[in-house]
Image 1 (cartoon, rainbow, N blue to C red):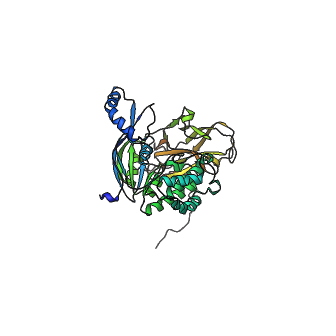
Image 2: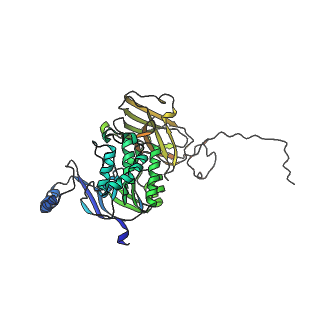
Image 3: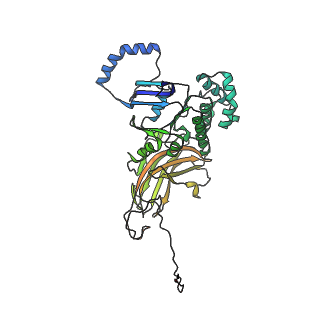
Length: 432
């Protein structure tokens, strides 16, 4: 592989965090020299008591200029840590990273902007950090503002922005200031669906221009549409690296254990923000007992518990259901119910439940994604792999299979439909 065409080279990369220890920063030359003197003693002390964990361990890969690479893996696999190292937000504990070109990054909300500065000022600040001259940034300003759709708030300090407004501007800046390498995390899940599609379209444009894109997402559809190559991380290590469809299939079929309930006891650590927090997601059987296995003939009840922390918003909750190939089967939300349709909910605790009728889903494993949004479709909570349930065919009499003896021929659904057959007598069957 020609070195001139390499955009990113990673060798034996590792990142270790000390549980309960101080946060690490990038080091000055003086710090580096002092630490090199202290290193033997530091290693001795660590050998006596090591309470850290490796978020990344022995990660190596090369990325060619113009390549679009997806990074996938379960929560805690090390995806965001890798992107923070590539974006120079945090240093590695061991190993090396070579970056050939300017890096524009869009990670968690809050990274890269100064809260006291206006949107306009932050655009110029980010451009300067990327090494651009003011004239270059001026040429891009109108395009950035138009893409972000927040023109009337451009001269407002960003600390007053909503999370959706922040991401709009942050992505517009990262995408339009022409970095050679664009690093994007799952932060695009914040904001409305129309803007997410707009961002994916822009990343496709960037890829066709020959720039390198690193994209972390739990959305396998977006990964397969955008990325020609994908790297799968598990427990801080690369477990697969290759053609996207093959790696996605490995991800979807390995390590996803059945899980009928997820709960968050500590509300402050629960998924969500200052508006709403998700407390629990569960699947219930016909006896309203938590379960992870269901007969194709019985209903499945999906339930979300959440805390509304603001009393002036219209909240909608719901689910996306996927099969093991990552295909979206359907989505449903409580905006379909009349009780809270378009109504502001008082602050407090809520439990929302929906029923998926029996004789609808086909056998196989179903992944459930849970979400909570405010109108008009601003996402506040999205739990990608909230549940994983198994639909089992017990070959009960009276079901959709009737007396069909063999394996049912595929498909996501197996509904028990109402059939009528009319016998028409006295019709000639002579076909001479």
